[in-house]
Image (cartoon, rainbow, N blue to C red; front, side, top):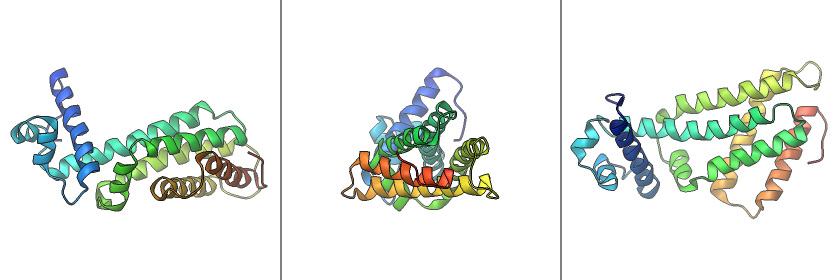
Length: 200
């Protein structure tokens, strides 16, 4: 952003612009995204928008930061709340949190994943994954698991697998009920965590 808002009125204006930006990006896609459309959706003049965002690139960058931060906040909060639970309890709660975060606006997720150039998301997505992997590593370090296997490697594999499967389910909507998906992912991840298949 061109300037960091300090007054309540300015902060409210930024939030208004960001909300409008998410709506326009979700509705129109990346190719048709324009600051003039965002200003119109926010009910302000383009000049007012440019007081806070110099151009489309700045606004898209903030939208991506907010989008991935929200996803990360929900998942890491769930992990932190259940960090002392056994895998068969922690994993389904975390999977539910991940799916809920991605389903919050599945159309925006589709645009982010399929249309927005990766350069806007790379740093934010890396930070999100790092937060979740750190918590997963701490969890694995406190539990007995397969001997001689790195907790950091296992946490990377788990996070990457859960993310990829959750995104595919939300975007593709296969004929798999949510409850069954949570059960299957719990079985998959529990077996990997403990080194043997576990019941959900």
